[in-house]
Image (cartoon, rainbow, N blue to C red):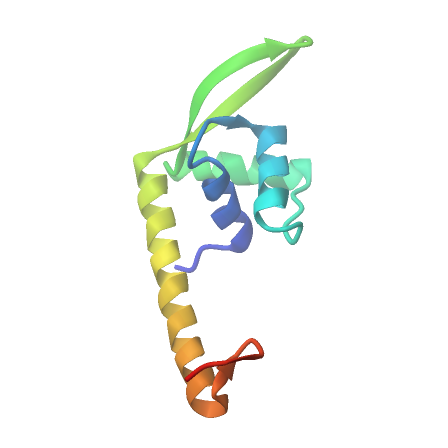
Amino acid sequence: MTMQEPTFFILTALVRTPLHGYGIMQAVAELSDGRVQLKAGTLYAALDRLSSDGLIVVDREEAVGGRLRRYYLLSDDGRAALEEAVARLQSNAKVAATRLREAFGFIGGVQHA
């Protein structure tokens, strides 16, 4: 099954360090160069799904300003799923790049030998 772009960037955001919801929203926007802008409802539904699928886990919870802030961490299964998605994207990009080069001699406006 192909990983959706928001899921890809949520998992990518959690590669280096645990993040809370707002931190994930900011990281996803930055990592995607603004292409993926998660709304709170969408994000928390995705986090619930990813958690139930075992791709992320709750690292810790903190009370901040009377509200509970939950930090999420990429699980081993999440890392494996992300690695698989990266490999699939790289393979697909290689196929497309080869066809473009064969058909037009260039990729993205850059001439290739």
